[in-house]
Length: 336
Image 1 (tube, rainbow, N blue to C red):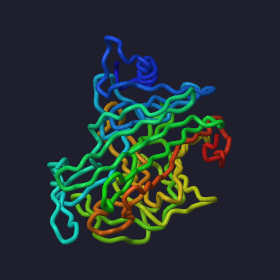
Image 2: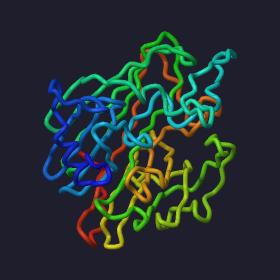
Image 3: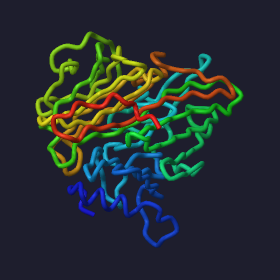
Image 4: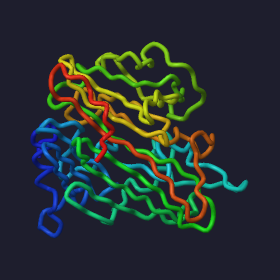
């Protein structure tokens, strides 16, 4: 499959769905296809990732080829931490914990422990699929948890994602949840779109992506009024999000008024915005990443949750779109 052609990515991902047991293999494992009305979502066994979400044939997330792992962590879910842990080191009851270094260039532990994990099927219906993977005790994280991810195409055809961590350990376990979707609007170059993020505070990070301070948004980092993607070079987390009815929404909008948005609930009070020139086949790509805590939360404590034995914690996020020119974006959150 030509990864630079979105229609090909759409068709190939859709064709891949439901082919478990066939002779054909995919780098991201079994593909789960959800269809409702003109909406299509493809979810992968690897990392419980979102490979595709489209409406009426308009691709709303970045895609990739059958033989590829997700470029730039495209669409993967993140647990038991999102983003990075500095040097892979944190302390538990005064004892140093050393996570495996997975971002060698910056000497960080990156994107949790399930990026390369296979998720098993828990439940599947016409419009939804639930997958789950176990986080086993390991280097730097001596806890046993389960990460459960449910994808649903709701009645308004929006995509709704619910991520849940369950602590099966006998001790409290620290956690941050996150996801790494990239949004797009069909064939439109992303640099021609306007990105709007209702956030009042930017997390200021060093060259290794580790937060060192925070400050009120300003200049190119102030996305509240919308900024043209083509003029941005951003890899930054935000907080103090603008919630309306328990939902914060971040939008990519075309000049003709069409738009795609990512929303997140109040359990998810951080968002990371990443505008990159390194996504295969795209001059620029835009990741909008919902997170319950920022990078290095295991050390800073910002947004960090400690789950008691047997306790569960969930966050919800989703994607919606307005694809008629001149039509304002719907206010729905993807309810069934």
